[in-house]
Length: 350
Ligand SMILES: Nc1ncnc2c1ncn2[C@@H]1O[C@H](COP(=O)(O)OP(=O)(O)OP(=O)(O)O)[C@@H](O)[C@H]1O
Image (cartoon, rainbow, N blue to C red; front, side):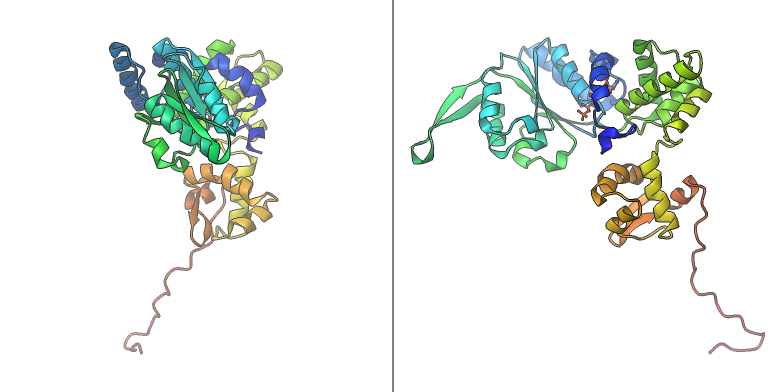
C-alpha cells in the first residue's frame, strides 16, 4: 500500500526510472549524512592506499535515504565493478554460491534487504565474508560432502532497513556499520535544487524549501514531490515553480505543511475526534479509518511518532498536544486534581 503513496519511502515504478538519473556518483556529491560520509571516506581511502579490498560495509536506515546510492559510490570510488542483488532474491544457498563464485577480485557485492535472506544462505555468507571461501554441498543425506571453494576477495555492502533484525554473527562480520539518518530540511533543499538542475526544472529557492520541508526527511520523497510540482507548474503556469505554485500543487496532492498525507491525517483525526485523543487500541483505531491494523502501524504511525504527534503506550495510541494543534482542534479540558473545597471563614474542614 505504501508504494502507492506520494509520501511513501519505498521505490515506485516511476521512481525506478528516475532514481538512477538523480543519483550522485561521487562521495563528494553525496549530500548530508556527514558522519557516515566521512567515516566511509576513511575506510575507502585507507583500503586504496593499502591496495586491499576494504572491510565489509553495512548501511542501515529507512527506505529512500540513499543506501543504494552509497553502494554505487563505494564501487565507483574503489574503481571496482558492482554486482547488485537482494535478500529476497536469494532463496537458497545455491543462489548465493552462484553469485559469490563468479565475483572478480575486488568486486563490490551490494546485497539490499540483507535481513530478508534465507537462513542457509546467511550461514554460507559468514564463511565467504570471513575466509573468502564457500562450502558447496554435493549430494544429499548422510553421503553429502562439503567441497570448499575459494572465492575472490570482495567487499560486501549490505543494506537493511532493520539493523535490529540481523543476527549478531552476521552484524559482527561487517567492519563498518553506517547508520543513515533522516535528512534535515536544509539538506533536502540542496537535494531538490540539484535534482531540479538535472531534470531541467526551474524552481525558486523558497519553492525548493517548501518541497524539502514536506518530504519527511527522505530524498526519494523530495525527488518525487519535485516531479509533481513540476507537472503542476507546467500545466497551470509557465513551468517556473514558485512557492505559491509548490504550495498549491502539494495541497492538491494532499501533502500538508508537515508532510502528512491523507492517511496520516485520517488516523490522527480519528484518534482526536472519535477517541478524545486516546488511549485507544491499534485495531480499533484502524477500523475507524477503514484500514488494516498493519497499514496504520507500518505506513502511518512511524512518521506520526517521529513528528511527535502520536505516542505508542502500553495502554494504546495517544495523541500529543501537538496533534491537536496540527489539526486546529481544541483538546478537551483535562479534569485536573480535585479542586480543594472552599469553606466559609471560620469553618473547619473535616
Ligand atoms: N544524499 C543524497 N544526495 C542526493 N540524492 C540522494 C541522496 N540520497 C538519496 N538520494 C536520491 O534519492 C533516491 C533514493 O535513493 P536510494 O535508492 O539510494 O535509496 P535507498 O536507501 O537505497 O532506498 P531503498 O531502501 O528503498 O533501496 C535516489 O534518486 C537518489 O539519487
